[in-house]
Amino acid sequence: MHPAPSVIFFTVFSGIGFGLLAFLGLGYPGVTGWTAFAFFAIAYVCAVGGLMSSTFHLGRPERALKAFTQWRSSWLSREGWCAVIALLVMAVYGMGLVFFGERWTILGLIGAVFSVLTIFTTSMIYTQLKSVPRWNSTATPAMFLSYAFAGGALLAGQVTWAMGLLAIAAVVQVVLWAQGDGALSGSGTSLATATGLGNIGSVRAFEPPHTGTNYLLKEFVYVVGRKHSQKLRIIAIALMAVLPIALLAVSFSHVLALLAVISHVAGALVSRWLFFAEAEHVVGLYYGKR
Amino acid sequence: MTQLPQSTTKKLGLVIDLDTCVGCHACVISCKGWNTENYGAPLSDMDAYGSDPSGSFLNRVHSFEVQPAQGEAQLIHFPKSCLHCEDAPCVTVCPTGASYKRVEDGIVLVNESDCIGCGLCAWACPYGAREMDAVENVMKKCTLCVDRIYNENLPEVDREPACVRTCPSGARHFGDFADPESHVSKLTAERGGMDLMPEQGTKPVNQYLPPRPKDTLSEGAGDIDVLAPYLEPVAQEATGFLGWLDKTLEKL
Image (cartoon, rainbow over all chains, first blue to last red; front, side):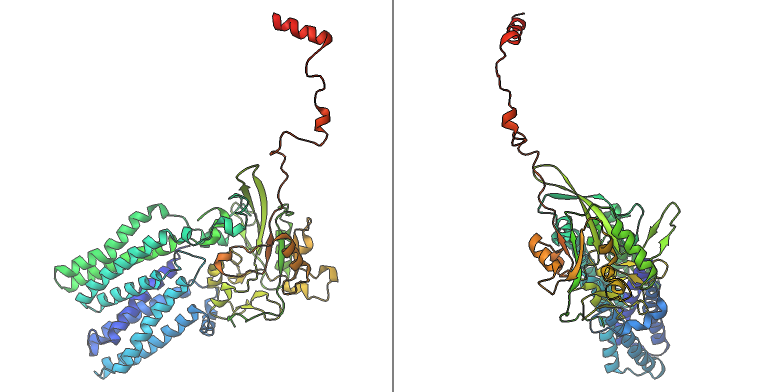
């Protein structure tokens, strides 16, 4: 799949932003006044910035409001609703903390639930696709949620939680990669089933339908950089989890914590690039590619 | 509404005969022509006369080589367009309701004025039947020529999809699969019509007819023709002058 920068930024930053909102909603850290304002500002910049980035991926962003209509069937529509509800509820909850020094627990809980649901619905957009066997796995939502929780804990300054959750995210990520490597061959979809010609003999793509490229090849048959995937996986895990855990373990200071956040985000971006670049869409089979 | 209908009154679709398709791409061209001039946004071309041309098409013809365990390899031309699936994954993922399946005839369509160009429907389609138009930024797909098949301004003979109308080898057929007596249903039953990627669970309406078994010339190389026994050499041993010559030459 084509790794569009807008979608990579969207999933990484909105994941971290909603992860932080979930922690704030649960009262970790229990801040009020301007300190709370700073935390909420960071969370909103990440979450809203990510969501805005995703609209660059649209061909017709001016019609984006129509995406709220199909929540009964579409995960993308559900994601839109969850994000808006989470942002609105958390805004009211945040106002209480910042301006009135009051923690309205129920609102915080509702906001946290919808923040987590936003991350989950985002992950389901990818998980639901049978056409991309690597994503069509329960490990996909687990990965998105574990990244968001780890990033959220890191930004919320919950050092102990962050160290544990970063380690969990690393394990989930490795499981997703290991499972994903056999997903296409294990899916049962092959050129034989795609053409229905498998019972005659072995099928090979002989001539493509066009001499140039097309939307399908650009969007779904992205093969650049796959040969470096093992190196990139090691870099991703090192930056996303190992280095931040090490930095947090040394001793707590804001400089080290900032470095840990930067390292985590860089690692998450690498991992998310791989998430798209390595994913094989079955339509590639018709072109003799994967 | 992007929820799929429980059932559709008709199931309009195509039968594509892989035995008779000659791979001429006439269906591709007629499709592009009709659908650029009629329903919805035109199908754009990018750099059409340059060094890197590309464009939107609703129908494309692949060619595959199949090598049986024994015998010669076969070349099979393979037209591919929207299969108008009963369980169309492209419809349910649409966040705006632009993508829908019609209750009356089962055609899967895109309401282009509602499409936000998110591309998720094309991601969900395992067949690559949908293409985002690079100029209009909306999703394009086969409409089964919905503006031909019911068009009373056209002569009756033309009220079928452009690809079917134009196919010079009779490899494409259009009809209602919900009617067991329709010629597409009968063809499918007679020739063992098959679903593409049945394991994806999309329940495609369009059916592909497998190639008929090929001639087996290479297998029985011994009897080339029924007359072959009569053409066997009558005289196994040379006699007369040739016999003498043969023996003499052997002795040398």
